[in-house]
Image (tube, rainbow, N blue to C red; front, side):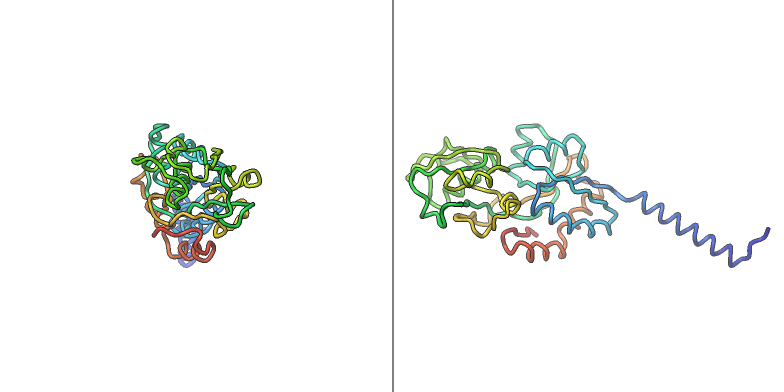
Length: 265
């Protein structure tokens, strides 16, 4: 049975289209990216369709704490994560020997001190109990915030990881209780005030601008995308960072968070 020239051309065209589609599908890179709930997850939802145009299929995996996302990335259960700043990553690498690296900056979440009992820091009484995070990076960051606001004085040379033991002056005789960062928002009914990372404040329906003390949006606390060191030069890493650091994502951050989250690019 013979096939006309036009019919044969049409069939060849279909075959070519199928071959191209199969080729494109084969080149799609699936990325499992670990985040904490709240802004990090919301921002990555905006990144997804932008990254899809670059052949990346992003799967967002949420974690309720700050420890497991790095463990999962190191173990190969994720391709990347997006939830932490450089001091925290450095501390994890030092303590846990993770072979992870930063490949791009994302957003900054100015840390806040919040209270369900007092409308301003001036109302917080002497001897009050203040909740801070129990991990060295975030707990230290909270103490630095209190130092910068003149609430306490820390010994010289504490760097980015001071502890309660480094407090040398505490005029209000504040008591500090150290708890998991994910639980600080839930502690508000039981303490005079709590240091809460912005992502956990947003998750708990706390307006970030309601903080009675707020960190200045500067310093080393810009968040980042981390990958395994062995992957840092792979093409998908560049495509992921470009997708995140896009005008569309910056516009979303500005409109959605109204200054409580700041784009770093």
